[in-house]
Length: 451
Image (cartoon, rainbow, N blue to C red; front, top):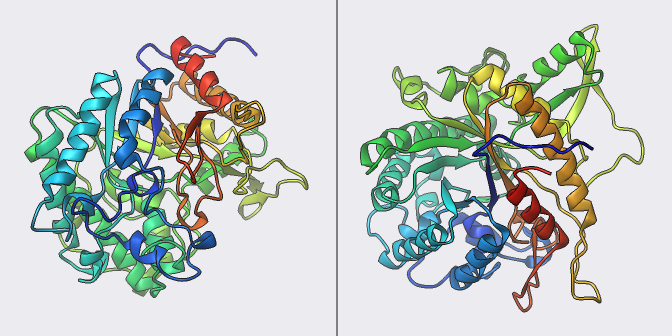
């Protein structure tokens, strides 16, 4: 493979989320979240695991920042724990929670790592859930007040912000399927209302953040990208079929790109979804799309996998993967081309700069008898995906940076500690960190701005 050089100033980073790494769940005034609630429900989480301790980053953040410095990461994406800052979600502020993130942000900056802050990565305050959660019409205001508080506190040092992480997951998996927190199985009309309130919360938060910022800030959000790839990339009909499939709403789920992105960028719901959902659609206020559609600065794409389609007589047709096709431990198919077609199609439609805010794989890693972690599969996977991302940039897609998921092995939601996504191995009994071979490889990528 030829040497691939990324654009000057391309941002190489890592990513984590509060409930997955912090621990300290019942310390220093932190309130409960819906994930604390779900983790105490028998059978909800693999093997009864919880994020109560996780990677204990709450106490070991200096050690993790030192790892980022060693890696040479230029940026780190992390989320704030809403109930650590506002134990009841609104009202009284927990000074110790704010102080913790002051220390974390200052430590990142001292290490030369730019903080990219996500306001909501699923740990919704339990006390607000008891008031109706995202179904409550006041929920957008609750979120906007929280957003204003933290931007006023940290925007003297933090210039890049994201509102929601993967609304497809916390709305659908959390409120329809019930496998993620809060574990509800609502009717479809109620699920759509949850989604609409989450979009209003995004828009009101953007307004509040702009008003509270102490300097110009960049705001985005980070949905999970559901990618279709053409069976024959040289066949324009298959490329068009993949584009159609990428932006189609097909059923009562949110594994599509348009339901949460079109309202933000185009100020409307996708027509096929509106027609499909009919009478279940939520009531939409006269100003709702003006609120939701506040201008934002970048699109954070979380891309892990894709599906293959071809042009058929009645529209795009799914092409099944052959028997024995490579997959990760999750198991998700290994589809590097998703990091070409995903950014390309998203940039065509929304014309907004892109960050790859998550990409990585779950693999079966362990510390070997030589006390090292040899995760050759992660290196191969990331090499293939980054080569496709480089091709997208070469073809004119404005991609500003890449955040590898994840810095650390961590609490993988309903999967508990079964899945390992980290560049750094974590022994969850001792909490010892061991950089993997992929850590050393990625360190070289960052230094060379390519590979």
